[in-house]
Length: 165
Image (cartoon, rainbow, N blue to C red; front, top):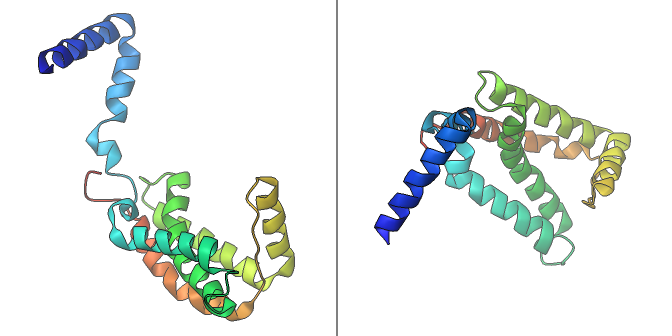
């Protein structure tokens, strides 16, 4: 069985090198460990995964179920969302760049503040997500701005990983 796999790999490598050496080089470059190390450290950190799990559980189970007060579930979503969102934003912006973690945190923080301070922005975001098939509810509530204290954690988790994932 191992011999068959080895022969299959050799054949695949030979065909790739003969027919399209530039494609073979591109594939090898994509799986290079150096390129993987530029992902945000969030994806290898238990805090980010716990925050993501808590966000999903809170937004899809606890909210509206009457198990917890809505004031608590709303604040919990804000806190864990500010931890989860910056690394995701960093991926979109290009995680390997020097200023990407700070830019990602800044964009998330400004967007959050805008939605919390402006009913128009909150409604516009709801409409946009609704058009994308993601029904959501956002409330403009300036008292939620204290949750921005969680943003430095999201920023720290947006920095490039030092480990190979």
